[in-house]
Amino acid sequence: MSRNQIVLWLWVVSTVLIVLTWLKMVSMTFGWIGFALGLCASFLTWGFRPPRSTAPPPDVADNHPAPKPTDRDGTQGNS
Image (cartoon, rainbow, N blue to C red):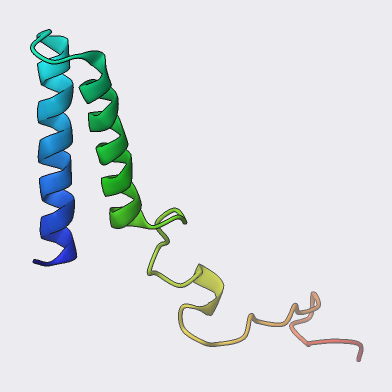
């Protein structure tokens, strides 16, 4: 079974346990177990770090150095 399938089943079981607690069909302990399973599913999905963007920052997107500043006359540096 893949990690995504495990996460899906953890979410389903946790949701069912929480809803059964709301309907007073099981004790509150099972509701807390449902919340704990949902938290475990979140950690399996995202890991312990928040998700990162796969896009590089805009200044290195094209791997070119930033342009050097120019003077008023269009030349670069001290001339």
